[in-house]
Structures are given as C-alpha cells and as structure tokens.
Image (cartoon, rainbow, N blue to C red; front, side):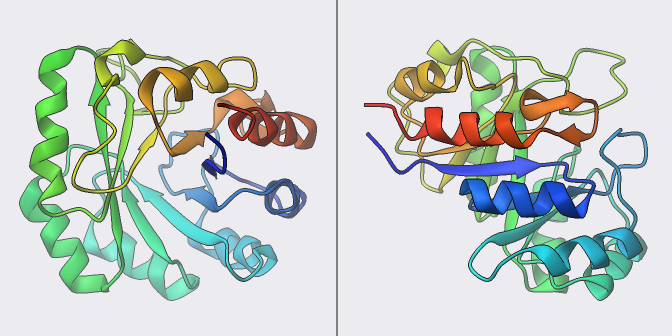
Length: 216
C-alpha cells in the first residue's frame, strides 16, 4: 500500500504553505473558524493561497457557516473545495454545493459504531467524507483536538460510496498503523504536525507524509 493522499489542515503562514506543498501534501486546508488557533481571515487566506502550487487542492474549512461568510471566503480566494466541519444537515450540504458549485467535504465525527450511519447518510450529498474523532461535549473546537477514535470501527469499511479521509489524533508515529487498520487512502492532519497550536513544523509534515506512504 502506498501513495496515500495527505491533507495538511490549518495552515497559517506562507512558509507553512510552501513547506506542506514541498513535502507532498495533496490538499491544503485553511481554517475559517474564529475560535480555532488555526483561524485565518478571508483576507489572510487570499495571500496564503497565492503560495499553493498548481495541482494541490485548496480547501476552505468552515463550521456552520452562513452564506455571508462563505460568500466572502469564496470571493477572496480561488478555493477548490469546501469542508463543512459543523452540524450541517444534508439539506445544508446540498444548498452549499448548489450555491458555490464547489465539491464539498462533509466531516463526520465518530465515537462509536452508531456514528458510522452518518457516513452513509452524507454520502448521498457530499463529494467526500472526512471521518474524524467526535469532539468531547462542551469542546470549543469541533476538530483539531488531537484526539483519536477506535480505528477498529472502520476496519473493512474502505469501500464507502464516496472517497473519504481519516482524521483525528494522527501524527508521524501512528499514521502508518491507522492506515493499516482502516484501509484509508487519504488522511488529514492538523495538530499532529505542529510545534505549537497553529504553527506547522516542516520536519513533522515531511515525517508524516513519509510515514503515510511507507505503509504496506
């Protein structure tokens, strides 16, 4: 098993963007959730996306965003995908796809087996799914908390109807095991490649991508 696509999420500076792309990331995520340490404004994102090379997907991460916010984000920078990381309904996913004409990644939080049903539900409307650890109750952030879930829940489930990414507590030391256990062909990381909240580390990003592609 090789050639796993990696998404580095929550980039906040131009040097981080260049380092992530140079390391081989296929997707670069920009976080528009104000409470996150990885938050960037649409104006900041416009500058950061200038450093993304052709062929690397630019992803805008939002949490229960209004059309007003999405309008400003999509007007500011040429994003390739929208990532909905809140409690957006199936209907809201459809509305966003129709309004902006961009592929949508819907995040599904998982804590136990019953949470997997939402993956099938959102597969009907989203272009991709991101399977993440469900945030604890009263958590400030819906993701990026460095928490993993029981990967055994996904064993043998790699053939969902839509492409999917594995997220939640991944880092250079455990990503290979996570891929082997779940069969994931795409993985997403934020805090697991940071030297401090919101500060991506070039060495950790390289190590993460190398580990992801060394599985098999």
